[in-house]
Length: 111
Image 1 (tube, rainbow, N blue to C red):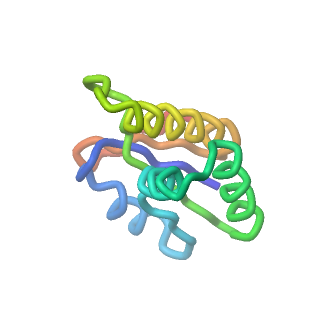
Image 2: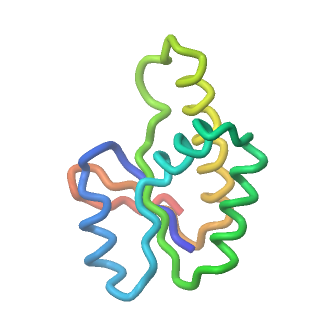
């Protein structure tokens, strides 16, 4: 499993399609987390769902926006979403074979 992160609209998906032509892409991981939290799932429950997907998928590349930079949100739900997403991404980064940050369509391998 590889992890590709970066800001919104920075060319992550296009880069992944060019670099990994025959892989499974899990795009918008950050939105998946938000949807699961809105359904009422806890971080632990979301982590279990992620584990199931990781076990069942070969040659997986996960794409996520970096949402932890900038101003801290005023709404508690948004802060919780941001924190949990960051914590889950940290766990994925530890397990990933490669972690790449995309800025302006340019890749920088950070792991």
